[in-house]
Image (cartoon, rainbow, N blue to C red; front, side, top):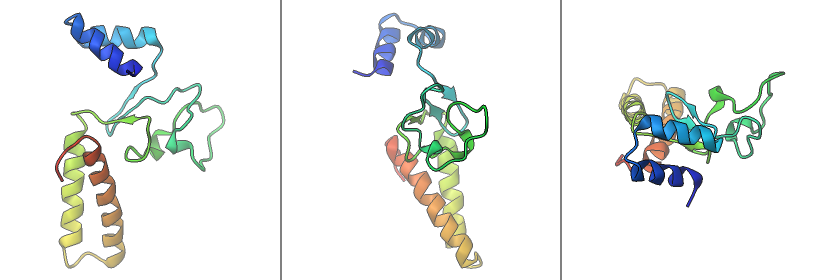
Length: 130
């Protein structure tokens, strides 16, 4: 059982709330960046496996992941919560509209198809129907 699963089980066993979970997370030294598109569990002092750092130019003095290069569909450090699903669902629908619009230029349609693949991959990770 992973660290997060143990914390979740402990919170449930104690009939805890978000504050209890936050306290337990802080004491276990798990690094979590709560974001709009996902939550990142990469350790800021040792971000091994962070896809955002692959082939990246890291600014001087920066530690941890690079949020603007995040790929939740490819990174093991990324977690998707229920609060993120409406964003990916909306993004999926917008990309489908672009793809199905006959006036969309071919190059824009290609980009929309790549974005659609990402949105679908993220939704598939959490078991959402596409």
